Length: 258
Image (tube, rainbow, N blue to C red; front, side, top):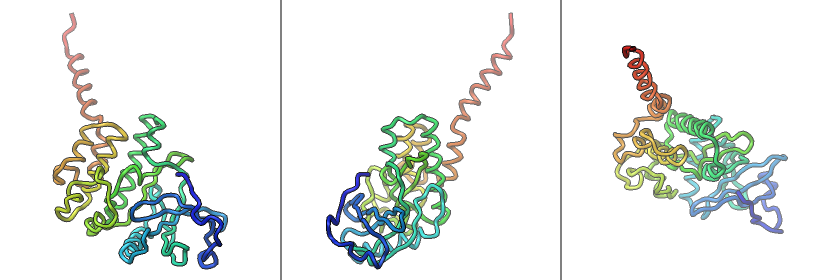
């Protein structure tokens, strides 16, 4: 991500309060901003609200409460939620040197590498679901691939099951990757909403398949019920072909020889 100065030559406001300094804007959207900052010789990302409204602060607080105890190699680590930044309340996160999934795919990684990345995505989402957290905004922009070893890191995972509609109204989920029930606010969403988003990402990462098509079924009950079912289908994706080849081999062996 391209960095840009935000404070120019102005004083390092509130540096004594937080210990962070040299703030640079990394990314901004309609609701949030991400800053790069330094502290004790290390780099961190600080997520803050764009408008400093009480509603957005509550969302940031909610994300902190849900994600602070999460510990998984494919999730970006959350450290603290602090006041006293030049831009107000900030969520301090791990800094990842990497690129988005979309940028990674432009590098034409091998099929083996893409399979590995997809398996890491499933692992991260399964971990969240076991903790009662539904991501609700799985998309390439929220998936970072590290430059060091091409490990997947999932961002923005701070919403629980009963926060799904709250997420849509306040965070502006990307329609292309959001499930129909989330977009239509047609009821309580669950893990199958993330399954839908995974299916869309899967098509971009690995191409269309019967697994991806089941993930993106319009009716939630026609999708995989959870990530464990999806993982099982993924592990067994070559099983029908193997069975067919075994049957063909058996037929060939049983044919009479002349």
